[in-house]
Length: 258
Image (cartoon, one colour):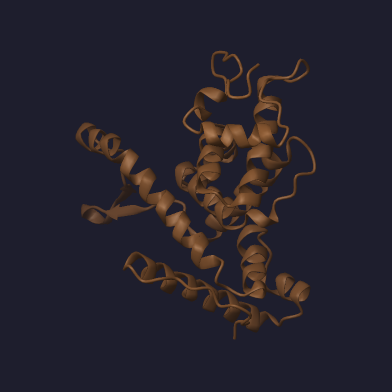
């Protein structure tokens, strides 16, 4: 197989989704990644292996193109897994929103990823998704309702009509581009935080630790942990606003957070 050629594609092959990123595939080859399904691999194992190597490449390079390729490759499987967890009691949760929050955390905390085995990314992203779902359950009401006459209530109908569905289809590409820009600006602002603040957000928002447990790991009291998280989120939001208004986000070199 020539170095620049793609493996022979099969129906539903992951490379059908990765063809828009030939440079990313080239970099995987340069890392010694075999871009063909092995004789002992089924499709799931093959996809898990490529996803793990893509995540490692994104972790090491922080290249948005690597993240976008990873998202396109892994999105269907992660979404299926999230939907499989949403039983009747959790039917009020939006799987698309949970998926977006999951990949937002993947984008924000790539340094937390460890490439221990071919399915490392699948295990890691499912852990993140589980934490996202747990936090969503703790802060949301089971159903949203609207008041009717005679003080009756019924669940709101959130299904879009035909016209809205058409509009959403037309705007999906622009929304995806806007989300990628949002992730890029967030990651840029996140890097300006001190090492302690980045580690604090990782423990609380990705690994799902309580303020008390995270504080014990960092040697910080619970009340101080809450303040660190609050201030870090405010700093990120402020720097993102500055960046979107055309200002420059500058790193705070050698400074710790108050």
